[in-house]
Length: 450
Image 1 (cartoon, one colour):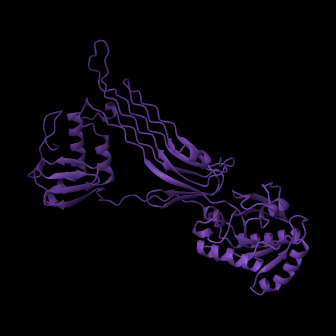
Image 2 (cartoon, rainbow, N blue to C red; image 1 turned 180 degrees about the vertical axis):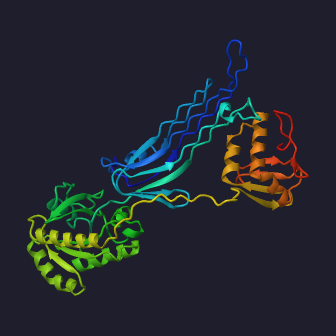
Image 3 (cartoon, helix red, strand yellow; image 1 turned 60 degrees about the vertical axis):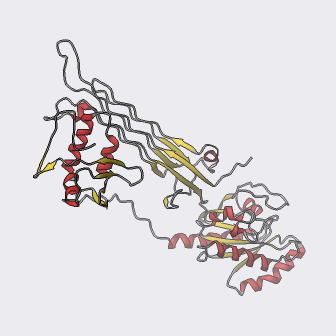
């Protein structure tokens, strides 16, 4: 059974807001003591958090559906509903979050403790106590809670390491990590021994850096052959690429130069890696024939402008020089990296006079109203309650929606869609504005919305 997963699709649902309560205070000698319905509780949010103890996305592979708790409904005696508990999902350091439908990158989560609200909760509905006013002293309705966000997201793990070791299977990448660090990856003499990226921490002088291997690179890896296509993304964050070349291979048609060219072509095909500095490691120098081959190809690689190190991961020959060379390149990259600016919260208030909605004429008798406020008000309305419908009409009128419809050419009986064309709320519009003055019906009814 696999114990490492670095790409999953999860289905998240934030908690819905609880409905408000419509209640009237009653006690002896006070049969109508006024409205006392409490507000509904806000739903819980779905939050992603980088956790130092999480290294794989396996848990989400097995359980991709995750939901936060809904808010509780309000109650009488001015008792507000409890807020739904947030759902915190731990993810590994280096997780990229994308919208599954559009492919848009939502956030790149680097740094232990980093948090991101991936699904926002629904707001709780107001109870009738909060809706009371001088004109509406005892509302017989409450607002519904809003639904929380529901979306599908892709979690994609890109290992956070300074140095990437690339090369053919059995080139000695895992052995090199074991020799340079305290990591103990699985090592064997058959291809694709390494099925997951291995990480190791190396200390060279005053520089401490991490190295990772990219398992299973073979010709065609960038097109999906072998295992390399699954793990090439782990190279993207690395500042230095180290080619580990096997000088003792007995496979026909292979030699260090051809291996180097094949791996380079796969890196170019994957893209976005041309700017990374390279080092070349000629491994297995403890084998006599391998040492002779290393001495033969070193000048050819040097002519290409590459720094070449002949080593033996088995006997630790040349590892000190290699580790300091890697540390030098990592330190140079860190010194050249721009200093991150502190995060600033930018508040952009709406301009004075901005309506907050838009009216669009779809055809001769159909109009569409879009905007945060009218769409939210629609979701909060209980259409089984005439008074709640009247309250919605009042809100839309105060916002200016009715006047905008009149100016757009809407006439009585026109079809008005509030929200998206697919899934929006459709009404047969009955204008209440006549001669500049709105018509109002009796309490509990409204002639504007049919």
